[in-house]
Length: 111
Image 1 (cartoon, rainbow, N blue to C red):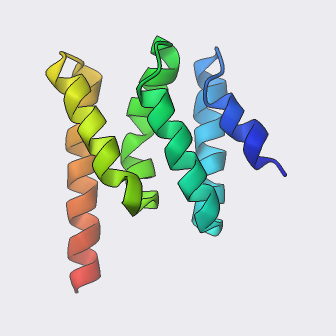
Image 2 (image 1 turned 90 degrees about the vertical axis):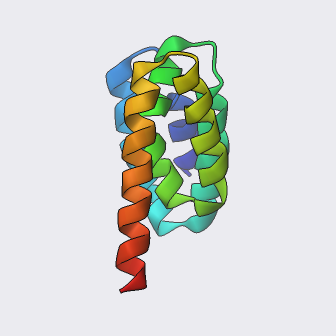
């Protein structure tokens, strides 16, 4: 199983490795809902991480993770809001992106 090593790579030192791991884990989460739940838990940990690089990658991929795992979306958006209030411009940008993506998704589902 590749899931666990991929989840471990979400905290890698290299940003390109973290981004590639996010892309692969998000793809896996679309195919396996139970993997999406584990991703969301690891993602919440990364959003709270003292490692600035891991936190930055988690912020960047927050909209996709929130859409993938609806049960974790409120927690993810709450953490993004907290980071934005603390002055993170990146968190502000991706909080707006996540909100827009969620609204678009729900509008499409309503049609």
